[in-house]
Image 1 (tube, rainbow, N blue to C red):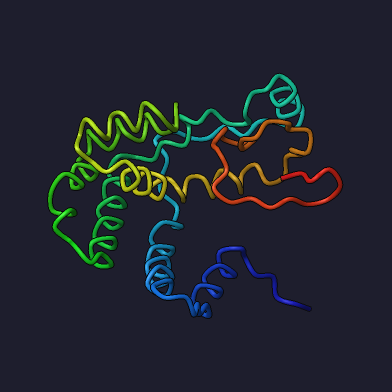
Image 2: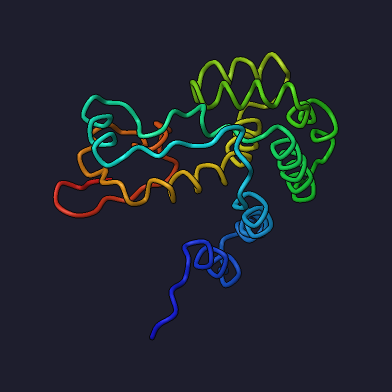
Amino acid sequence: MAESRSPEDEITEALAAGKIDVEEMEDVLDLYRELYPLVSRKLSLAKKIRIPTADEAKMRMAEGFTLLETRDLMPKEKGMVKRAKDILRTLMKHSEDDSQWKGSHLKLADAETLAELVTLYLSDGGEELRGRLVELSVEAEVGIFVIFNVLKGSFLDAARFIGEVETDNWEKGSCPVCGGTPAVAYLEGEGGKR
């Protein structure tokens, strides 16, 4: 009987085996090789996720609501802060100029600030968060990258929890589980469902 492999095992193996012959892309691959094990681990959530029944899920999606409330994906503060520090340390290690990581970007590891930014990300995901990062003198793309990666384990867990729920009738251009915008997608089947 064939051994079943998890998606995480497949990703880890692909990162380990990957080689890219494009200048500087190997550095990017090295960064992700180091980041993936950090960010894919489960973080304890601040509150328990309630998984909708099949009927509730069907009704929520028909009404245009996501299967989960995004605020339910908020991890506990202690785990978020540790994860943010690990991500920042990894980015600093892979950066040509580490001076930027010693200044304003450290605000991303402050518990109160991080909780505020994660809440903005989960509720809005965009413009308000960018504005707040600018106010904090944090480069927006770096801030969003750190916050997304702090939450990545929560997103993966949510996808696993919801994995059994039918989402084929979801017609919006966002995730039916959390409402987030897609970072990577592929089209499949008739009609090009993403």
